[in-house]
Length: 249
Ligand SMILES: NC(=O)c1ccc[n+]([C@@H]2O[C@H](COP(=O)([O-])OP(=O)(O)OC[C@H]3O[C@@H](n4cnc5c(N)ncnc54)[C@H](O)[C@@H]3O)[C@@H](O)[C@H]2O)c1
Image 1 (cartoon, protein in one colour):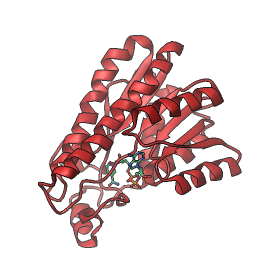
Image 2 (cartoon, helix red, strand yellow; image 1 turned 90 degrees about the horizontal axis):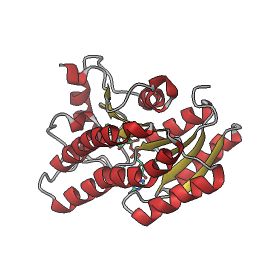
Image 3 (spheres, protein in one colour; image 1 turned 120 degrees about the vertical axis):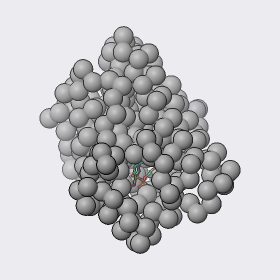
Image 4 (cartoon, protein in one colour; image 1 turned 90 degrees about the vertical axis):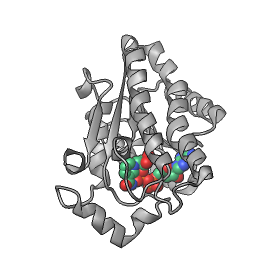
């Protein structure tokens, strides 16, 4: 098992790629904290893992709430005594019709960018104490390029994740903490997707992908698994793009 005896906290673990990551990590031997604002779905992901013989608990966490972050990490330490892996995956979509919605800019930066900063603020000190840890921040191809149907705040938030990952990688390498980013391409729509959930828009997006199809959630979760595991022991500050070749065009 690739994560035997490790403890992982995964934000946005109630849905999509976060839920898949929680399931795959548990299968690989990790005890998993599923952290989300979606209580019922998050509790179900944790219950399903336990029913399959794995270790999991649900913690309600709004990633924009610093106090809630401190409580989530404290709860993890109280239950399992360590935190080896943090996956900052929670996020909201920027595929909204109004390109100049200021309120959306604020929400995107709060959840997608500040939420990642707060997660690192809460978890990295515990990793530093043990001299080991792996943080995987979920960015996007939107952290590299602009897109027609995506609010610029989404691109800005994901670019912030991409570069703050490198800051943290450089600053905490001496402490044994690795920090990397994963950049999914076109995936199943997010819960909050609007334009990119439209079948006509999706068809156009998929046509631009060299592999000719959207990604599957477990294809991103498996990339995250590699970076989270000790197999990536010399990998820090890198960007792992999982996009069927989209950015290579
Ligand atoms: N779906 C895509 O096409 C795609 C592509 C590239 C990157 N991403 C990124 O991947 C990550 C996961 O996306 P997904 O497709 O699984 O989306 P999803 O909508 O299925 O899941 C996102 C989860 O984040 C949670 N969440 C939202 N706001 C939160 C908050 N303030 N605090 C805690 N949890 C919160 C939601 O409740 C949900 O469970 C996101 O960061 C997203 O930006 C998605």
